[in-house]
Length: 347
Ligand code: SAH
Ligand code: SF4
Image (tube, rainbow, N blue to C red; front, side, top):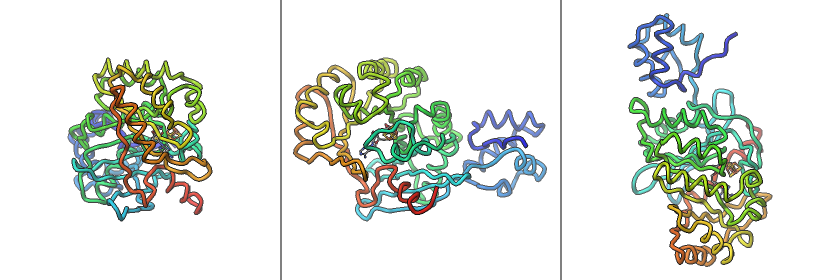
């Protein structure tokens, strides 16, 4: 049997080509696309599509879904965390946050992750598979439908390493920003990477206008290699060079993420070294007090340490802020709800 086609991962022009090549009129593609944008889950729900075309679609394609498996709402700030399950039963997490400027969603790009960072709950559970473009879209659509709101900002900062699923992520970015689809502009999208250097150059060349966030978490190779295996493959010099090029090519400032771990990477000396490395770059540093993950033994830096770190960076003209903690009662950092789900016998 031929493999079924993931119809929701097609752009409107790909769908048009598919429909006309199979001898159906062009306008049907737009109708089908319209239904898919309305988040229908069955071809039978496509009311204005004739039954022969519906039968053809059923035998050649499938509609991918993201079903709500679990949902947690923070009592403090209404942050919502979802565990979504896909057609094959695999699950990922997404988090919706409410800011002054609107709703923002943090989506996953892979089931698990191969990168194995020592502080990360996702990294600890290993890798299952890449997400398709439609599965990334579905996390946004399902959350919007459930909450009855429009989501205006997307961060690719959930489970998985987006640049390790490059082609599907690029396809997703094109779909989500398309005027016929969710129409979320590239300027409202941030992609976070642990630093797969060649892919940063590839991304820059696409001129997509998204913000690049790079998980640095250390001021030198030695320290970085202790928590992030990817640092053994690409040195910090190579990584920072790629970030400078990203800025040069796209004109977009790079954000550096730095999880502060008590007595690991949060000393004054660490801050000074970081400031020297980043000096003269168009960048912003986002400090994140590390979230404790069972089995890591890492403790977050206290507020005094965070402030001292910021002051040192500021004295060298490097803009830094501490990321606001949202959904602290529902453990809004990714990978933890899924871990619990697996412990309870889920996928
Ligand atoms: N794989 C990508 C994106 C997903 S991880 C990346 O690594 O950038 C999203 C962010 O959460 C990264 O900056 C990651 O380093 C950070 N992170 C992971 N586990 C964390 C933890 N326990 N505490 C704080 N930040 C964490
Ligand atoms: Fe993967 Fe990012 Fe977690 Fe590292 S921090 S294991 S790259 S998801």
